[in-house]
Length: 175
Image 1: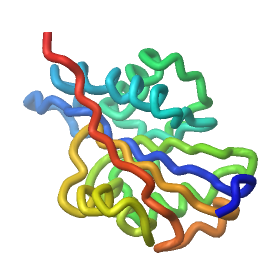
Image 2 (image 1 turned 180 degrees about the vertical axis):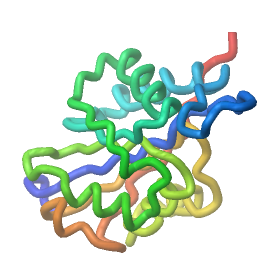
Image 3 (image 1 turned 135 degrees about the vertical axis):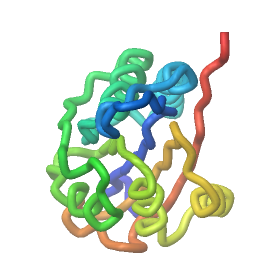
């Protein structure tokens, strides 16, 4: 991959949610741990220099709130698209969304859910950091952030064409 053609896909699984009774899945809020971890994810994005140009986020309450807290903590102001198709999406459906990314975008952040987020990372990662690949195969917990590097346009992204350059699971400090 040459520096001029590298694009970066950052996949963030929403922070830990709560399970209040009689609340529809799409309206589940973040739980106490999620409220601590989402800002930690934002700090990680800033400190690791993985700041997105554009964000595609599931419209579920827990994903929206994860992004809001991460963005506020890190001072991130990328344009956000709350995309209905990202809620409950399979890896293939998420791949279709990523392929729609405008060419001018260099770093796309996708805020979503499991199992689709984990499956997308594994679908795209043809190679990469061995420890990150093993961790992604084993578990993709809440607040996990996978960083995939790819060459060429978003529209040509296909299974096995990205490199998993890292996987982090930022955690906030319990007060």
